[in-house]
Image (cartoon, rainbow, N blue to C red):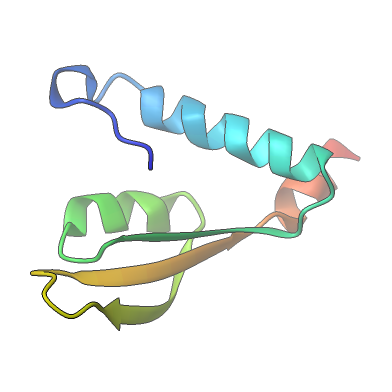
Length: 83
């Protein structure tokens, strides 16, 4: 789990973390990044979408007050830029 504490949000730290994850994934030969997030958080979901993620499905856990949105981002573009 990764979270940026509220007092540190909107300073680019999330983008730095995502860029680091993309770089490490590409270096290790991965083709995509897959994540699950609380889908009710539309601001975060839209941030992921603006960073190349697409929603691939939803999960609801018994007793959980939220829906998990599954998302993924292809690393093809990152790999092409690297070459």
